[in-house]
Amino acid sequence: MKLVLIGFGMALGLGLTACGGGVEHLRTRAAFDMKCGADSLKFTELGAGSYGVEGCGQRQVYVCKEPVKASYCSDWVLNSINESSPK
Image (cartoon, rainbow, N blue to C red; front, side):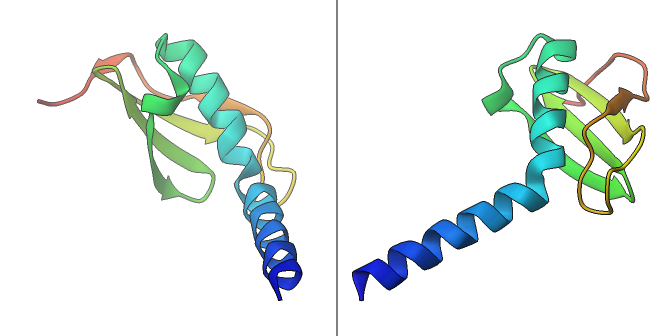
């Protein structure tokens, strides 16, 4: 029984990684742009192919340049002016 649960958990984890792969690319890009630790960033989906990113007192909007498929993007573009988060 344990082998089945471990196998299911691994399959579920791989599925989530495949779907969220675009956000992982965005996490890396936003951390670099914002000079902020990737783990401290908060993501809000704003619509098809766009996310708001908050962290380290900043707030940015990113859009997907060329989606590979509906749930995956590997090329994110900053689409906002450097702005401080509201307090």
